[in-house]
Image 1 (tube, rainbow, N blue to C red):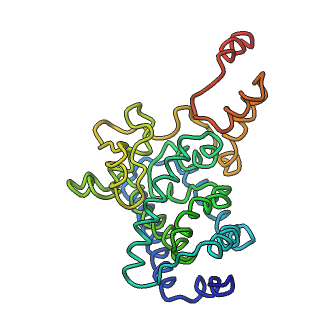
Image 2: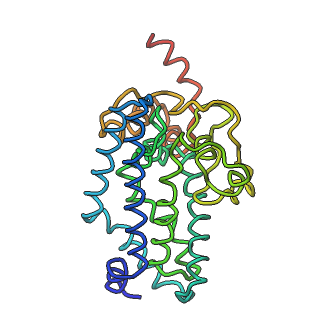
Image 3: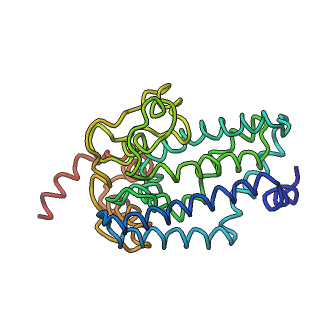
Length: 294
């Protein structure tokens, strides 16, 4: 597959029509939920929802520029390098979506476990509301690096087209789960990513932290021990609220927090660990610095 063939497929393949239909459906249910919330006077932080729409528009604009092509360009060399190739058939599409779901699980988990990547993903978790507009609240930086996680799919023989579309499908599936209007769904909550399951993922409750990473299925969470069912009322948002509705600040506030911690580090090793380590680690002398600044 050449670069021009990949672009042609992304523009003209029949499967992209279904992606468009999926997108229209998702934006429609967001609008319907807003109307229902207005009619029923459901409590909602409207400035927060407007910030989500602004972030969505910024991401849509960036997708129309070179930013939207970074992953496509970067994945092609790996496609040329691998000797493996999986033919595009109905069953390979099922495998591609399953592989993309597995890829999403680990991408999602790693974003929660390493602070520099959490700088991107924390954008999605920073709202104290939980409604369908939260599905629009995605980092404007994240698309520039997420292609890296698709490399294993390319190396085992999936075409860049199937890998990219598979991940798009996994992402599009998740719009409907960002709502409080759908209660628990019984056995479906055990197998699939549902509103109840994903509410847990967005919770800042201690027992809910770093749980339910799955995209479409909960298979990988059960397999790797990260599944948690909804048991207590979910407290949404970050453990340290950001207190802003500015779309730019929402996207970059965690980077600023990282930079402030880096400046306080006394060794290069500590600086690296602050940037690339887990979210909670801090050098022991930070406690002394905090006391001195009070």
